[in-house]
Image 1: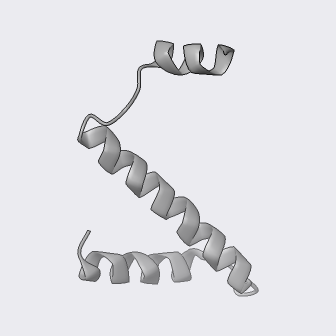
Image 2: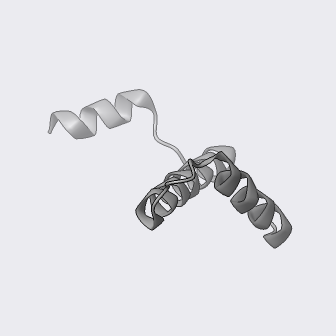
Length: 60
């Protein structure tokens, strides 16, 4: 992701938050978006586990 894209995302996030949003609200929103972005990048690279493999890991 380029810095221009990140900056425009930050502007969209700021515009979407309520006027009384706290710094914690902002940080949570950024955290969630960062995690989703990383997950999408991993999926695009094929760096994911199958549903069956995850079920097996959780059943141990």
